[in-house]
Structures are given as C-alpha cells and as structure tokens.
Length: 178
Image (cartoon, rainbow, N blue to C red; front, side):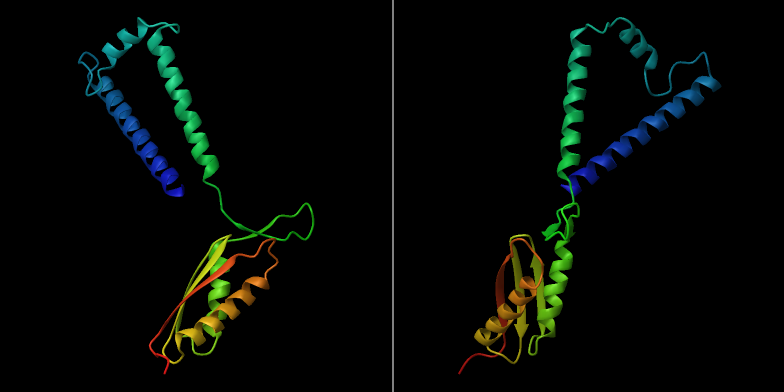
C-alpha cells in the first residue's frame, strides 16, 4: 500500500508542477503580448464555457461527486497505509509497545547465526509466522533443523508477545546422513 501512496503522491506532484508551469508560461505570454491569444491553454474559451454554467448544472454536480469520491478513495488509501508493527505486551494500560518485522527478524537471525555450525541464515518475520532458512556445511539437515527450530523458538518465546508466532524452519546442508 505504501507503494501505491508514493506513486499517487509522485503523480499528483507532477500534475501540480505541470499546471504551475503552464500557468507561469501563460502569465508571461499574456504580459509580453496582451493582444495575442493564449500560448498553450485555451483559457478564453474555457472562461466563456464556465460563465455559461451554473452550480445546478448536471455537469458541475457530476464533477463535484467525482471529486468527492476520489477524495474519499485517497483518504481510505492513506488510512490503510499504516505501520504494521508487531504488538508486544504493554507494561501499563496507557502504553502501547510494538516492534517492527525487521527488528524481530534481525533478533531471531542473530541468535540463529550465533549457533555453532550455521553458515548462513535468512529470516522473514511477521505477526503470525517467523520463517528461518538456514544452511550448514557440517551438519546433516535433521541435526540442523532441530537446533535451528529450538534456537529460533526460544528467541521468539523470550519476547513478551501476547501470541507467539509459529516458527517455520527450512534447512540446507551439504552433508548427507550416513
């Protein structure tokens, strides 16, 4: 959703810049040559057309409704593009404590990488699941899987979370069992 909001903001900024550039050009052109017609924007024809409209015209009402719907859609998009933190137990009722997905993944990843025999570890964390992908050259997959699951599970259990996420472990090992 953040990407959508950023793209909309960029497009709106470009549109405002374009309108500002056209307004500056038309103003300079009108000052330099007052008797000549418009430079790019046919504003005299627009002014004549708008003078013929009233606030009760169907076109004006339709445009107002379209602008209102667009505004509501933009407000809805802005409200849904919130920070999706992972809730932790609050020390007091008036205090809200959260952590980011990245922080949780970094914490679990550091503890998994500190475990002996783990060469690489990649962690993706969310409020419901923590996924750990670990690799080792010296341990078998079963040995590595059980150790990584235990370390990652303990790292998650040590956090003061109202509901602990499920830990999913995928391992790669160059060594095969004999």
